[in-house]
Image 1 (cartoon, one colour):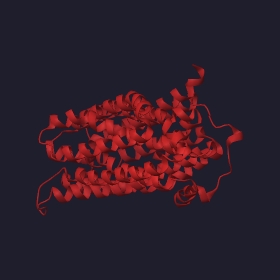
Image 2 (image 1 turned 180 degrees about the horizontal axis):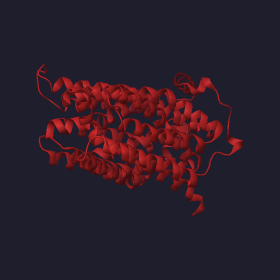
Image 3 (image 1 turned 90 degrees about the vertical axis):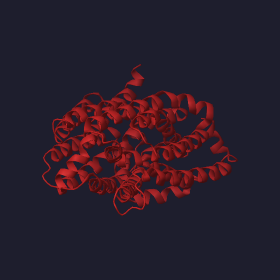
Length: 412
């Protein structure tokens, strides 16, 4: 049991982290509208710009934090980032203009890149054949956090749009305190390597993967998948307000329900799916399911249908951990932090492109300029990206199944 404690600690840490993030989601549309004096449609575009600001910082800092954790260990990087996130929420709770929110997103983007270090932590303590499933448990921890966080955030949002930020600051700083006392170091000094700026900057990190067969293609597929799946956080609050007239409490309830199903899928179902289908087939079927669900969501007519579809929405998310599991077995142990930093950078690119693109679609197709009123237009755009990813993965799978190294990977 003692050997399992570090993994339990990191799961708890990620869960508390996601609670802090989830707390603020239900009130962001109203807060942005209050600060800008615009409509929900306009607030969505501002929200996309803010999300892009966050993503730019995450893109540049993901590989840096991942490489710093390869050099100095996972623990110090995690703790410093968690403290920074708590201070960011304090700043956001005091925001008087939209520019305060931009400053807050810069800080959040830096501290949010911690996910790469947390994933490297999981890789350190997991057997190669268990990494994909354990990455899924990290996702499940986020899912549990999104059960609790948005529900509380929606409730506090009825008090005022700033109340959830105060609560998020408290949770994040408590998270850092908990980590200080219970989070041990997992990277032995003998496995650490010198810090290298060439590998720590996002472009250098991405260039370095070219020497590993098939990894570049898989990274592109992971990028397309992530861009398409990011449609949910990018437009969910704005879509549900525009389409179904959701209150902050209802937004919180819907996100909490989504998080509940996500926890079930990534914490349990993924451990059944991957051993039976293999990582490659799991990724393919997950993305195929996403394609179908995106098209259905785009044309939903009733709010209850959104809740009914949530199990299918979350099952499709198994493609992400499956792709991560395939790629993590293609690199050496001393480069796991670097690879997870690359994942963070790829996610950062997706977060740069997806929010601004999806909210622009949303703004246009909810305006009087649009030839057809369709709040669900961003989901149609995601379906196009998803089918491209499926086609690419099919081609890559045909090539790599003949290679012994990747056959071994898929056997996991």
